[in-house]
Image (cartoon, rainbow, N blue to C red; front, side):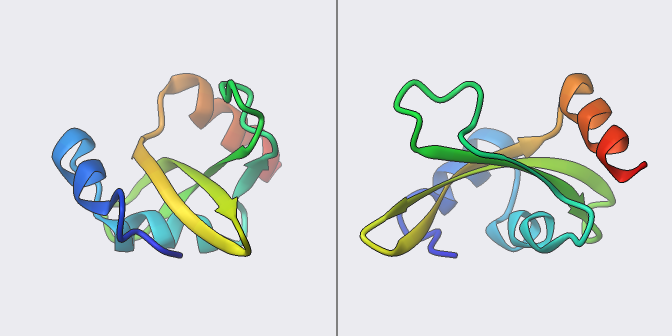
Length: 90
């Protein structure tokens, strides 16, 4: 995952480190919504997964461009995303 363009932004805006977001992206029980329902372009992917480092569910947004997957943003999952994640785990 390439966080070179948005990793610092994510940390400053939401207090989420790229390595925590990567954990959520690798979660075996993650929920992947493709495309992200909130995406206006239809290109981004929303992944909801567990980060063991911070012991919480995170929502992570990624986009692929020319074969490279870029991390765009990530934050602590809201109630709706946590419910989706829990429902997908059942």
